[in-house]
Length: 381
Image (tube, rainbow, N blue to C red):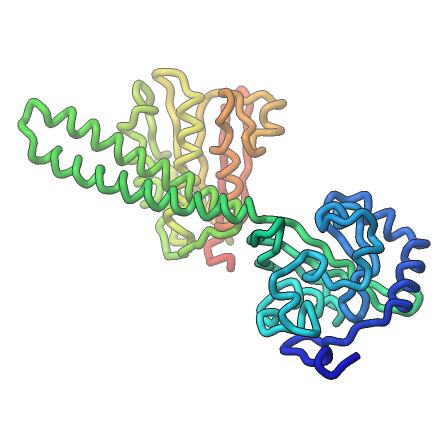
C-alpha cells in the first residue's frame, strides 16, 4: 500500500488484501449468518476489521445494483453506495475530512470496538448521474467467528420518515399561526360588534378556540409517539385541576343536555406534574364519558390521595363490553368508526410515558365505567 493511501483524516486507511477477503467470504458462506441476513428485509452486510464488505445480503445486492455479491467484496460501505465523499481521498470511505462527521463510519468504529450501537447518517449518493440525499438509520453489532472479529452493519432508509416529520412541523407551525391570528381577531370582534351580532361572533370565537386546541392536541400526540414531547413539571393542586376540567366542558357542545360535577369527597393535595398534559389526559377521559352518556345523564369527576400518589377518576353510567375493554387503549381502536380511537390511546401514552403514572379501567352494571389515572406526588424523572 502506498504512503498516500495510508493517509487519513479520521478512520484507519488500512485494507485487507483480497485473498484475506476471499477467505473470510468463504468462511461466512459456510455459516448460518448469510441465511439469517438474507431472511430479513433490511440492508445488511458483514464487515471485517478494515471496514470492508466480506458479505452482503440480497437486499444489499439489490440496492447497490450489482448482479453478484462478489463484485462488492472488499469495498467499504460508502464506496459500495457511491457516497460522493468516498473517492475524495486515496484511502477511500472513512478517511476523508467529511467522514469524521459521518454517522455510518462512527457506528462501524464503535462496532469494531465491541459496542452495539445505532446512529443517524446523512449521505449524498451518486445515482444515475445525479446526487441523491438520503437519511439513514445505521446499526453495528460485533461478533466473532473462528477467532476473527466482524461487524454486522445494517442500514434503514428513513428519508421519507424524516421528510414527513419536517413537513408536519411546518404544517402545525403555519396552521397554529393562522388559526391563532383568526382567534385573536374574533376575540376582538366579539367585544366590538353591535349587540345583535355579538352572539354569532362569540360562537365563531369559541369554535376557533376549539380548533386551536384540536390542532395543538394532534401536534402533542405526534410528538409523544416519536419521543419528542417535552414536559414541564410544576406543583399542582388536585382540586384546582378538577375545577378547570369541569369548567372547560360544562358549557361545551358535548355536554349539552348532560351534567358534569366534581365529587364532594375529593381530596385536595399538592403534587408535581405537567399541567398541560394532565389537563389533556383528564379532558380525554371526560370526552369519552360524555360521548357514552345519554341526554340527562351524569358524568362525575373525582380524586383521592394515597400514601405515594394521587388518583383522578371519571365515571359515567354506561357499561363497556369486555371485548371492547380488552382493546380500548390500542391505537386507532374505536367503536365509533374509522379515524377515531386516539382518545383512550393518548390517555395511556401520555400518562405512562410522560407523566410517570398508570391508567386503569373498570366497567360493570353497578358502578358503570370508571377511568382512573394514578400519578406520583413527585416528579417521576
